[in-house]
Image 1 (cartoon, one colour):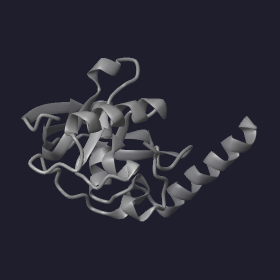
Image 2: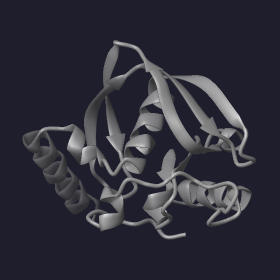
Image 3: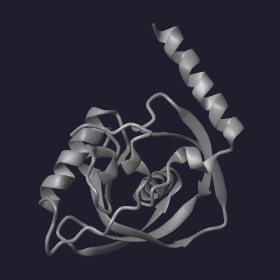
Image 4: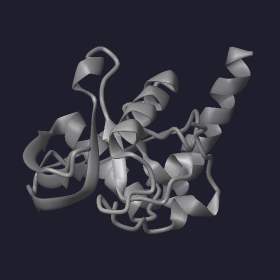
Length: 167
């Protein structure tokens, strides 16, 4: 699978529900391939539209603990807390750009696993941030939309400066 980069229009589309009755792809295989792609690109999360698949699905996981990586089909947030953290985020569709984004520190979420079974869990801290970042992708929202124009411009400038230093 190939990562789609911004400004590809699919990143601005709201994704349709994943249909387990008439799936666009075997959900177990989709989960496997997306997790492999995410880890191959040093990601912690990857949404279906980031690889050109129009479906309400994403994967999340840490390469230090690859066996815990999992897929989230038709995810939704049921509740959030008022406590907000301002932590750095990156995105595989915006390589090299990192920016702090304010998000809740805890959510209660619900989704279907690759077998179509409904699951529910709380997510905290960075897992919460990652879940919300990937859910944004499914809504056609990119992390650039979550910050001011000035903050984004500074992040892009810093990214270009870092690329020059690496060479």
